Length: 419
Image (tube, rainbow, N blue to C red):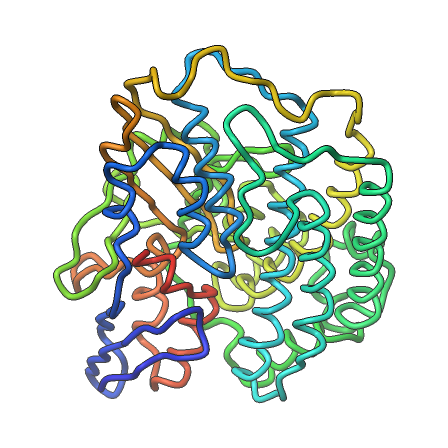
């Protein structure tokens, strides 16, 4: 049976095979590509700062930050002010937050039989877009991050505006998602307390339980995250055993003859990336408790993504308080990038998980550029003897409708996947 999956970022095709009335294999196809990596070849390295945010309309900012980090990594010695680092992290946080709201109300709600909540998706997302534009000048597709820092001069008024936008989103989250104080929610470590509360989060979780689908979608219980910053920790885990000593050199892409997407492995194993992986690696108490009861199921995956919103909102307020407006926004590199003949790598945690950019430059031209996106990790298309993460999560289900719910729980972005 073939299903064309829509209402995701882009489109994908799932080819289902059944045995004994249960799914025994799912062949995942991504149907088109714009070949951004090929477009970049021969271009001036700084052109990537303009081209790469166009990879995606949802997580374009993550591609910008990964790009600038990759170019800066080409230098042996480059100085970036703390102000510029915080600004980049703030705008990336805001993008993750707006993506999560869109996923909740435009993807998850309809999947569970609820009417799309347009305001729930657009109101907080617009506020976060305005917060990004306060620093970056516009959103989406900005290029305010440059090699050496950022091009914007942040003012006291900018800080006040961003805090106000955050406070408005916090208010919306408290009134709509959890019907509780956000500070109390952040210290909650009991899934039962959430289930017995009011708001859209308890509604979603109880619906999963009432439909008897809260424990479907289990995969390998393998988690990985590479995008270290002031909040997220890098590391990998199998079940609850976490190892923070990981090296991106062990990440490899593999061609997939049936799709424009490439498979991604770490040391020859498929790993899940995204909010659940980040929470497990960060040892978030509520998600650890959910994992004890539901493992890496759709329940834990949904809860982790919705819980990440207030975590990043509060952390962003802390980051704003740490900005020193007297620091420079930009520090000119001692060597012009046109003089470099080397390689660099940039890694960030995007909304859907770890995003990796690798660049090879020579004589002021890009010789090779590689982009490895989160959906490549989660939707790698293995074979029956070596299933990818989402394939494993769908195998054993009884019908394609359930499989689609599991598939979309990974917050699919086919546009990024094939880039």
